[in-house]
Length: 148
Image (cartoon, rainbow, N blue to C red):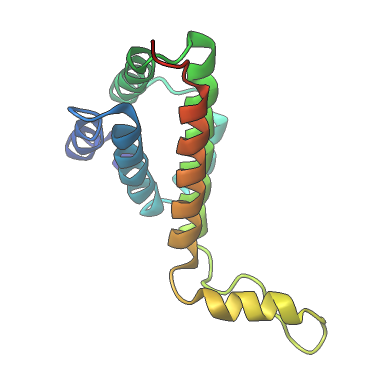
């Protein structure tokens, strides 16, 4: 699986270096999504099996450290990591879906859905990921205690 190859793993890990936590987490999420978008069939296996690969554990250790160093309470770290995984892996699956997911034809009366779908244009999955990631990071910022 691509996620375990050293060069890709190093690229994703490098996204965590030298940036504020939110910039690093966003870069890591985008890199992680791209890697799994190339292998969507690996996602169900990843989601249903414990992670044991040392390189993957090392990346998650770095993410946990990044969050704790930024001031997140330890009890917030795993929900953040799990939430980010859900967002990234779900979006990677969405990238393998058809561009038009809702077929509005003569059998369904859905003029607003059809209008919204037509107005979205190409890259529906990318736009949805950008929106969701921005909201996720904004929520995480709100979890940080105020700075003294």
